[in-house]
Length: 73
Image 1: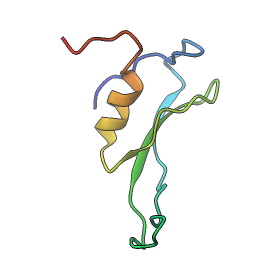
Image 2: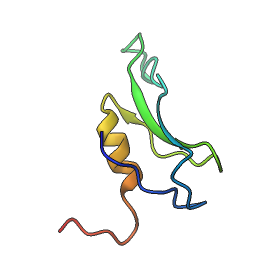
Image 3: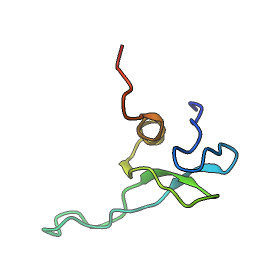
């Protein structure tokens, strides 16, 4: 698993966790019925949450680690 960067809001790194939120039950048109794993990084100190990402835990970590001003190079 990739290392998590410190929380951009409180600066702490020791209170971070990657959570399976099981956030999608069905779509707006109710075509999908069931649970789909979604992942999110959560800061247990200040309550900040990263974006929910479908199916890939590593993608949730990448989204959390991305900061304004970062370049792809």
